[in-house]
Every structure is written in structure tokens, then in C-alpha cells.
Amino acid sequence: MRVLVIEDEPDLRNAIAQALSEEGLAVDQAEEGQTGYHKALAWDYDAIVLDIMLPLMSGWEVLSALRKTKSTPVLILTARDATTDRVRGLDGGADDYLIKPFSVLELVARIRALIRRSAGQATSHIEVGSICVNLADRTVTKCDQLIALTAREFAIVELLVLHRGKLITRTAIYDHIFNVDDDSLSNLVDVHISHIRKKLGADFVETRRGQGYIVHD
Ligand code: CA
Image 1 (cartoon, protein in one colour):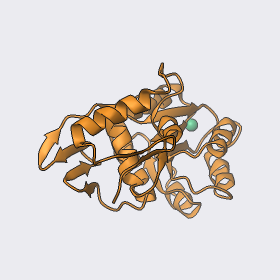
Image 2 (cartoon, protein in one colour):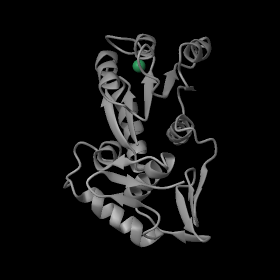
Image 3 (cartoon, helix red, strand yellow):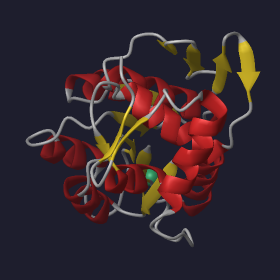
Image 4 (cartoon, rainbow, N blue to C red):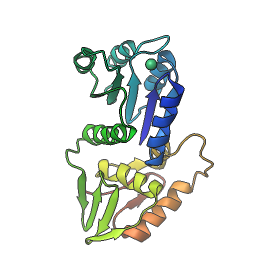
């Protein structure tokens, strides 16, 4: 999953980006509103963290401009004393909000829930045959046995099961999982998929040669 963080305070932006990366999410950053808005338009992010008080273009301006064309889930960050921001944000098309200062762990949990809901997934448990994926705990069990996956492997499994029944191209996996500065070869996705198939069973993921991968419902 790829998340855009639009926040002008460098320490906070870096802390958010680091926490999301550690959870296996790919993160892009913008330090002011205009760049953030253009990135948000150019790319189909899985979610956006949007500060309200931003240089060049405020969070409100970014949100209202973005909502003309895109329904990307947005979590806004508002100042503690701005009591009307919450209502204004939700009325303006934000999907969730946090009041500063907040716990970065809570932000990560909220982002995960937003991504899940926007994929039409109400609960955090997804069962595919004998495989059970817990999106909240980030664990996978096979026939009730816990299976150890790397963060990357889990991120790929998460993407595939959230869109189960749909073909996911190798490029889409690459774009949603890997950071731009990742030193990786194009066939790395295949390597991860092959590890996933070894751990969860070859039946779990179907390979469509030259097209991509699909997890069936
Ligand atoms: Ca700010």
C-alpha cells in the first residue's frame, strides 16, 4: 500500500513516514500543499495523511481540489484548538481526522482501517480457503497454524486479498509496495510471490503468465 504524507513540519513528517514504512507501507512525502496536491492527483494512493496548516496551499484547499476528481481516503491532521476543524474536515470529504499531538501508532492503525474500508473490507479478518489473514495484527494462519511472513510478503498478501477475485499486475504490486529508493530488480515481485506460495501453498495465488497474480475468493 502506498501512502502520501503532506506535512510541513519535518520532524513530524519523518516520524509518520518512518512509522508507516516500518509497517510495510510505501511512503511518499510532500512538505507543502501544492506539491502534495500534484502528487495526490498524479498517483492513485491508497491513503493520504493531510496536515491543515500548510504553505502554498492549505489542507482545506488540497482536500476540496482533490475531491473534484479523486476519492482517495484522506486523514486530516488538525490543531488542538481548532475545534471546528473536525466537522469542517468531515463535511469537506475527509475520511478521518487526528488532533495534534497524536500517537503515531494510532495514526498507523487509522490509516490501515481507512485502506481496508476503502477496499470494501469491513472487518480485519479475511479468509481464503484454509488461509486466514488478520489485517489488524498483520498475521497469517494456515489451518490455524501461524505462518511467518516478512513485512514485504505480508504487504503483497494484503494487497492481493483486499482485491481478491481481481487480477493484480506485477507493476501494480511494485507501485503499491516498494519505495522509489528501493534497490530492487523488477523480478523481485516474482521472488516474493514464490516465497508466499511456498509458505501458504501454491493454490493461494494463481499466476497469470505475462499478466499478474490473482487470489480467488
Ligand atoms: Ca503544518
